[in-house]
Each structure stands twice: as C-alpha cells, then as structure tokens.
Length: 272
Image 1 (cartoon, one colour):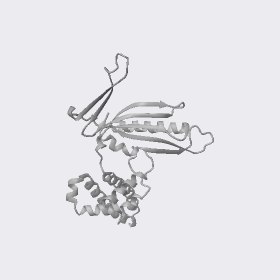
Image 2 (tube, one colour):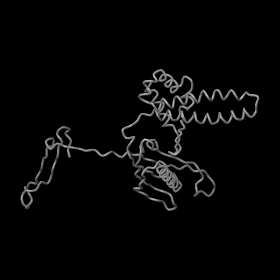
Image 3 (cartoon, one colour):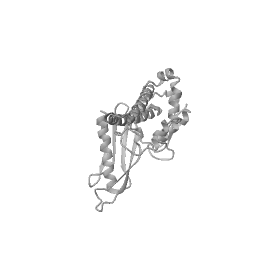
Image 4 (cartoon, one colour):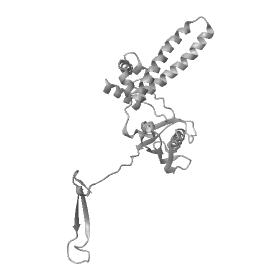
C-alpha cells in the first residue's frame, strides 16, 4: 500500500500546472483530488487504516494525525450543514449555502496539506538553495515572463523572511530577463521550493503583440540545494604520492624538477 500511495502522491505533483510558490494549493491533473479522497480511494483507504493505529502514528507523524482529524471533523460538519438546505426558512438556507462554500474550501486545503505531509522528507530539506531562471521559447515575451517569475520568487522570499541575494542578472532590451540566478537561504527554503523546478509556460497576449493574438511562452526554473559545510579529514597514511621527472639531455631543470604529481587515495583508489 505504501509504495502505491507514494506513487499517487508523486503523480499529483508531476501533473500539477505551473504555478508560483505563493499559490501553495496544488491542482492535480491525474488523478483528481476528489478521486484520491473518495470512498475506497488510495488516500482515504490509507487514512482509515492509520486511524486504527492512531497512537503509533501520533508518535511518528503528529502533524498528519492532527490534519486528518481536522479533515474528518470538517467533512462531518459539511454533511450536517447540507441538511439545512432543505429547511423552509430561506434565510437559514442562504446561511447554509455560505457555510458550505467556506467548509468545502477548507476541506480542499486540508486535503492538499495531507498530500504535502505524505511526501517523504529529504536530507536537503533544511538546506539553502540556488535558484536559476532562463528564458525559453517565445522571444521577448518569454524574457518578460522570466522577469516576472524571478520577481515573484524574490517577493516570496521576502514574505517568508528568507535571505535573497542576486548572483547573476542578464536583462533584455525591453525590460525582460534572459537569465538570472540567486542564492536563497532560510528556514526550510529548499523544502518549500524544490518542486518549482522545471519548464513553466504562459499563454497570453504579449505586450509586443499588435494584433491581439495569444502567444505561448516558456521559461525554465532550476532549484539546486546548497551543500552544508563538512569537515573532511584525510589521514596522510592513506595517500600514495607519485612524482615524475622529465628525462633527456640538457636543461638545468631536467631530472631535478617534479613535472608531474599523482595522488592516490588508497582506501578508495581515487586518483587526483
């Protein structure tokens, strides 16, 4: 069940349309969100099985337990509120409709949150990252789109109170952006940004279009985790250093100067 569940969750992320990080709600193209949580669906079945061992799950995944419990409560509240739609009082029916809309919105948010909590954590989730954006197909319009995306990430970093440092910035002639890179650091920066990598596209009427036609432009985003500093200690006894000297007649440095040096790490047989 667990491998199948992780496959479904990964498909959910891979099938989502390209959106910025400020829109944390994911829209899964395949399979649909409602199908995942429907009666007999993979996520619904998983949550029901885990409910039987809630004590053990609470130790390992307390946040997941809290969100799943909240989801169950909101679904029960939704069912009770829907019964009020048949009430004879018109004001009560209108109030019920408003409550149902809010309840459905919160249920959708809780379902997305459960999907995020089921994504396995990585060792690099706490790392800082390098962001790279590059204009793709679409000419100047793609460069304008790239500039907007880069500015969006910059504002998102400010919203999250992360450190944002521009490393490279190559603008276009009309205010767009050919390529840029930035260093982003902060609490769980890579965890929140790692799914943004890939090709992003936009369909709209460009500023450079005079006949009102819709164009499709693309740009690419690369998210690279910055490695943490490590203390590397190499025992000199594990190294073999071979030196080579030039041979032949003549020259004051011949046979006296080490012209080639090879270092071999004996435990791993790594050559340098």
